Length: 232
Image (cartoon, rainbow, N blue to C red; front, side, top):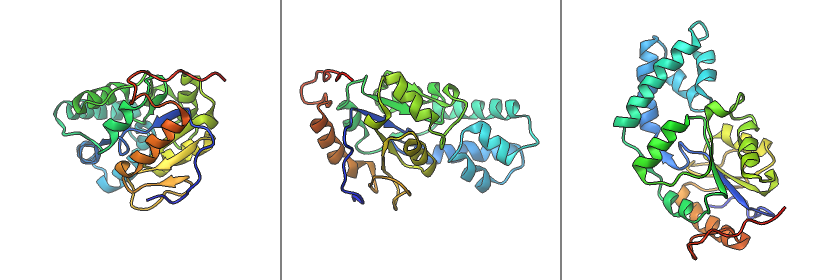
């Protein structure tokens, strides 16, 4: 369902969040954080609520300020790496179609997770990985700071105003908006404040996004050849 009819004035690049947007990992994330919270005697619901909107180090500072953050991170990494090997992951409906339609130099992943885990999940779900992937280790300020999306745009050689962000979470939406980009929200029952368009699922956004890519001349699906990169 579209909540705002206006289209971006110029879209040459698409920047995707990962967990909750392209990959359905909610059950896996909750299981990992449950085990981690139990190890430190913390309330799972509070830990999970914070973890969904921040990077791990920021989560530790909020829920376990008296604990050694390096130790907390090492414990989490151990659990998450095991989950990548044994967890069950699925790409959201429409993800494969969207990513196949994009030349690899015209889109990026911007995630609060770590690159090796994203690559593991994408390998297991058959999704392609783009040339640019901005992860938690790449920036000092995570979402909702604009830094992650601005870094992705810089690595693509893109002007922020030419970028479309696809997000599911409020912190990610704010990150994209603060970066001066157009933001579409997906996989949420109600629109996140500030999004230019809202879709209850990624699948519902597919037709509009592919139409937009055709209009912008960057869709690579029909010919099988990446579109020529525009100058400027």
